[in-house]
Image 1 (cartoon, helix red, strand yellow):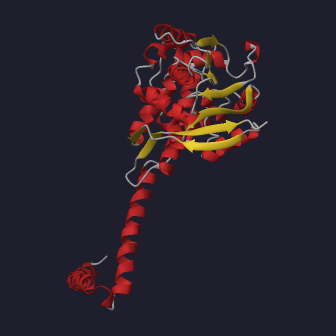
Image 2 (cartoon, rainbow, N blue to C red):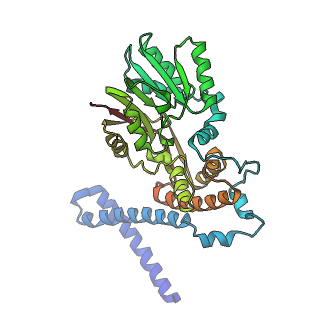
Image 3 (tube, rainbow, N blue to C red):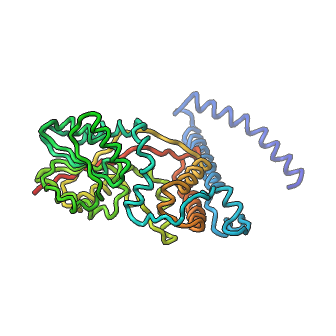
Amino acid sequence: MSMIWLRRLTLIFVLLVPLATSQLRQVAIRGNNHPLRPYVYPIVIGGVRYFREYSRQQLRQRWSVLTRQQLNSLRKDLPGTSAWRRSRFTMATNQNWAADYSTSEKKMNELYGARALIYDDNPFHHIQAQDYMGYLKLIPGQKVLDLACGTGILALLAKAAVGLTGKVLGVDITETMLDRAKTKAKETNADIEFLRHDVTNLTGLNLPKDWDVIVCASAFIFLDDQPKTLKHWASFLKPGGRIVFDVPVESFNYLNFVVSDAASALGLDVFYDGRWIFGPDAVAIRLAGAGLEWKVLTSQTYSKLTYDLEEGLRMLNVLLNGPFGRTIVKSQKQLVDLSELAEINFRKMFAEKMDDNGLITQETKFYIGEGTKLD
């Protein structure tokens, strides 16, 4: 652009800005009576909206999904993996890649076995158990089957509610959790029986089929073939008996979603797959499929976690290199491939879900499913 035109534009700008400022002031003072109001307000509001959307698009472009070719261009070939990937996803060199986590029992022991001694230290588990008592509405004399009972927090509360004439049976696959539950029951003189068994197939326990309530707290999402499992549980209810369970809401599952998608693309099995949860209707479909009259509630929000892209990637790193990751992969190479593809998925998800400040909020909140046996 020539200097002459630059001077002309500068002069026009200098002359128009005071005039525009004066007119805007008059619009603000006179309101609807000013003849320019119908034109000024849409321009100002439209400009603000355009700027916000432009800023959001810039954030999306800045944090856009890296293609596999772009990622590979960042990698330096080293034996087994890459220096760049090592810097982003720390390899757990002491992992036992030969360990067999092919069954639900082994995966649950991997996830919960080491947590038994500290599980009760988390206040959330006690608060949620108290909320469950509100959902269950137990009365003296009822029979309660607590599946995936863990350390017995809910079972102990249920026993206090049903009294001496009632019965509570806890079933769990993790031995260390059951040991803790049995110890607590003994210390409190609670007459509760705890059995070690796969909760998805109760046939071998020779249980009666007259239970008032079957409850599964904080574990349903981990179970194999959930529709089949619900039908199986329903067969142990008496007419009018209820099944109560929970699953986390969508925002709690964002990291799980991206890992599950990546694992599926690589042909790996996912133990905790929450992709079927698209809202309370998803829980209703599960209950209706089991032939139960359904009702779905939403729990309180127990906590919120807000994170940006970098913090989200760090959380993804921790998830993949922890017990959950070891239930999916069987070698360092699989971990590298899963980490790389999961990051691609995460960046894409983050760009779609983030708010105007470039943040995502994860809620610890649950859908509570309640199914009643009619016949």
